[in-house]
Length: 87
Image (cartoon, rainbow, N blue to C red; front, side, top):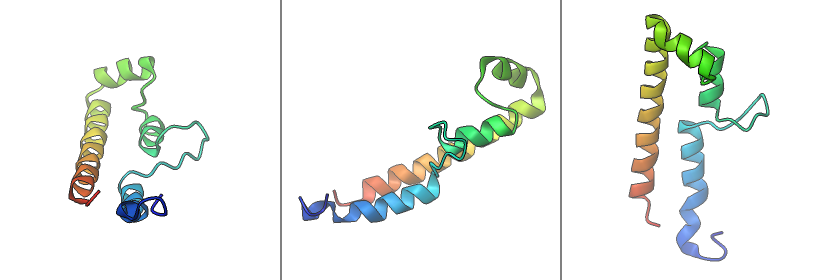
């Protein structure tokens, strides 16, 4: 893309930084973000039956909430990276 417009020369570097914050590899080939795979593997998945069970179980609910808070922090870092980029 930076061949088309040198202004976009930062994109590959930004992509690398974002990939470190929010890995998107999907070892189960489902197309899901690694965050969702890990959430499912820990038993706090987003299947509606699992959600009901998680919301009724304080420990599972706390684990899910912690995972979402951590993910939100990573998203905040991505937003900061993008806002600081000269694009």
